[in-house]
Length: 359
Image: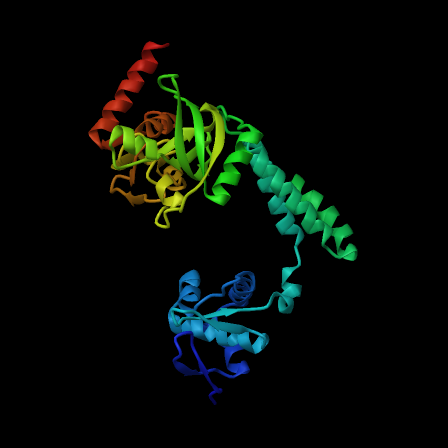
């Protein structure tokens, strides 16, 4: 038996299934996904359209409509707004889902683990913020729940550790990070007093800050209009090592962020953090005796892996940062061969020769 007619975000009519047909049929999604959808709609100020829900969960539009209908059976206060683009967006008043917002000891332990990892990587500002967040969450817990949770939480925290990763990790100055974070949030220009790692020369330049990348050395990713103007180049995106920034001062000007810029996608152009040229196709072949180990590695977001007939493993990805690729290849000893590009193979050979001569 079909339910009443309701409308989707585009104004089309469809039959809303009865409660028993939605909740009893596994096609409409697991309980965990419905809970996640509930939290998504409650945490969004502008709401979510049917198409956005479908994209988030990787499902078809019709399935997204069914899940929304299932949610409405449980939360009658689910509401919608019509936008100027004539797209209906759904949202859920947060008062109706308070029981779902209870914090678990496992979630608090995950926050503590993330804080521990950030402190190890010397990202103190973000670590302090995670600690403060965990403290506030614990303070909001029911006192009857808090005490046993605290005991379990301490055990969970003690049971999670991180293997030490050799290599230097530079600590950024707290006041510098605060200045950069403020500029990032407010889209304010900065004037950097910067010492080049290569030439050691100090320069001043105006930049538009877009993000921070953390690794063995933290970097500010910014657009430099001065570089575009003075060097007459089209690409003004630059990395600035935080340990090279001697001073960062706002100049009182705001800028409009380029909506097409994606920090994650930009970082994926390189291997590691620093980009030393245009991304290029890199092909590596690992010997059969290390193939299983290599399969377990995520070398790069764009990588593809293929097992060869003789048991070897071929890894292909596209990235810049060839010097950092070489540094990683050193850890595989003689168990990896560079197939492409030629300049990576030549660079790797030269570094091996230099290392041999330094002994």
